[in-house]
Length: 177
Image 1 (cartoon, rainbow, N blue to C red):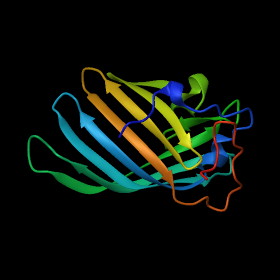
Image 2 (spheres, rainbow, N blue to C red):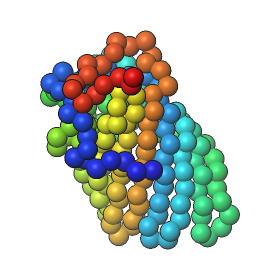
Image 3 (spheres, one colour):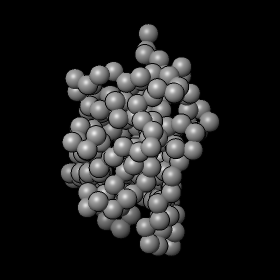
């Protein structure tokens, strides 16, 4: 999977609403690479962005992880995770929190908001978000440090709009013809 470089992210325009864009259900396909061992894996599933009373979204991801372990046989099993996305200082950005309320990182697609860094002792997690179009986006986690050396790349494709209003589309975000 090749997520475009950040400078290939389209111009979103001044009215882009990240919450409206994400709301609904998306398929997710993720590649996993442990660079220290060469082990590879995948995650496939569904991510749902669900409205919350605080004006944010719940990020709920469920699917199957497959991991080709070098120390044993391959592993395949269910996996899930959740985050809370809360409004930030502009509709084009959301702040991501762990389920227990700890801040994680900032999420956005334009300018500096499509990059963020999270330090999780003893490793550094760098994320880049990329908007590919009205119904497709992705993100890349580059994890480095003494405990981990990993690259995780995710592609999300819209499954439905969950009955929400269509997001405002800037000049670079056009519906497919």
